[in-house]
Image 1 (cartoon, rainbow, N blue to C red):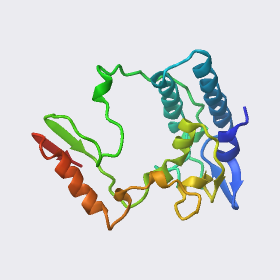
Image 2 (tube, rainbow, N blue to C red):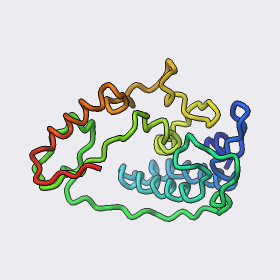
Image 3 (tube, rainbow, N blue to C red):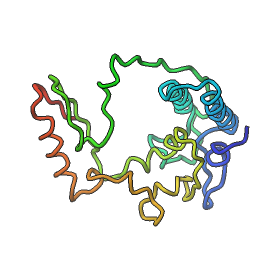
Image 4 (spheres, rainbow, N blue to C red):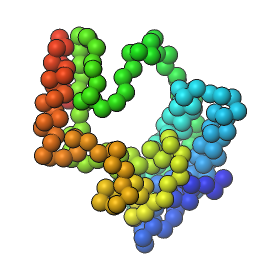
Length: 199
C-alpha cells in the first residue's frame, strides 16, 4: 500500500534532499499495517492498551530496519545495512498493570507523587525539544498524516519557529533559562523519597 509513510519517508525528494528512512517495500508494509490497526480497533472495539500494543509492535519492527542515525532528524546519504532487511512484525507483550491508579500521566512538575522508596529521574539533557526528533513516531501513533516539510520531511507542527507550531509540546525543560528552575522543582517534589537516582 502506497500511503503516508511510503510517500514521505521511502526514497522521496524533499527540498532537493533524498529522504530514505525505510525501503519502499517496508514503508508500504507499514502503511498497510497501520491502516489495518485503525480498522481492527474499530471493528473489534479494542481498548486503548490493546491498540497501543499493536502500534508499539509496528514501531519496534520499523526501528529495526530504518536508515536513521539515532534521531529522525538525521538521515545519512549512504544506505545503512539494516534498511535492506525485510521487517518482521511481532506483537509486543502487553503488560498487565496491577492497578490503573499506579500509572501517572502528565507534566512531571504538576503531578502529586505517591509515597515510594525510590525515585528514578531522567530529565531531558539538552535544550532541544524531543518532539522534533521523534516526529515520525508521533505521527505513526497519532496517524493524523500531517503535512511535512524541510529536508527530512518533518511534521510542520514540530518546527517551533513556524507560526503553526504545536505549543503544547514546549516545556520549561526546553530552555537554558528555565531548565534549572524545572530541575529544582522536580527534586523538591520527589525529595521525600528514601532514595533518589538522577541520570
